[in-house]
Image (cartoon, rainbow, N blue to C red; front, side, top):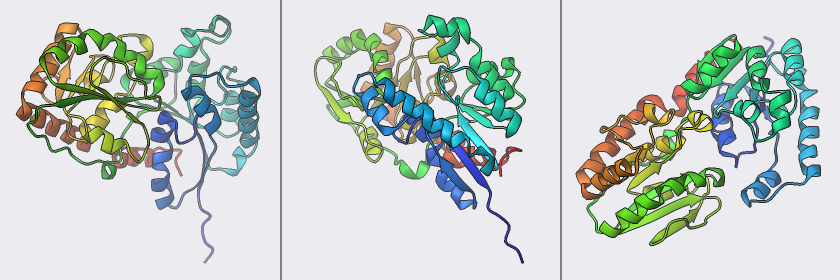
Length: 356
């Protein structure tokens, strides 16, 4: 009997594994694809060196960026060797959508979004880009065979763009990597935040909240970040982020927070911090922006807080009551197990019509 050829997927994420969006939307699913007998090639647009430079707050060289464009072009010439091309966001950043149009005619593709990257074009910082190609991502969405999106805001944009098929795929965790925290009554409690250098700026709005709380409570603020720079006064601790160490860092927190401004870019975020906190059985306090308001049921698995007073009140209640922290943490843990796991998403991925 002739053995059937194995199916092959070309994954084109934006970043190597160290980049959070690509790690969560592409790399963590690769073992599941392999278990289904699917061969895959992964070719990120940017490389490790680019991320190191960006995370260090520096500007990458033009030659380095041009090298990324050249590498992407070369891998695209092999697209005909694959059964499916799976693209993260776009083929070439800040370049017209002609390559996506050509790929759609010659091969077809599946494109995935976990951020409102269309606002880099219609509301971006580069005026020339906004004038010349404000609807680039709308075209990428419209020409795709399938658009997968992490939240309702992104789905609505794809639908307005005229996408053929839009599927909801929230950003999820691998539950086998996480453990539930054992909450105990103790004198010193830890409020924590995990995130990338680009999102650390959202903590600035909570400085007066922190000043108020630390006058009443014995607190530690824990920052888990690639760029470990203390932000708040008082007892602030930092842990450099690593993939292998992030769960242990989360378990050292008592409460997880996710502040966000109610702006267009932030409405496209997929509440991954909250999902991580809840996967460890932590209660959360978050801004009621975008998907945060979907993941958090106010007063059940955490609190939604908008004003300074709401943040102070919510955190104070949790700091004073260990049983409340435990109860909300348990509800959050259950929510993640029901809706935000790797296996839950993979079932939907595997069922997509264009999927091998």
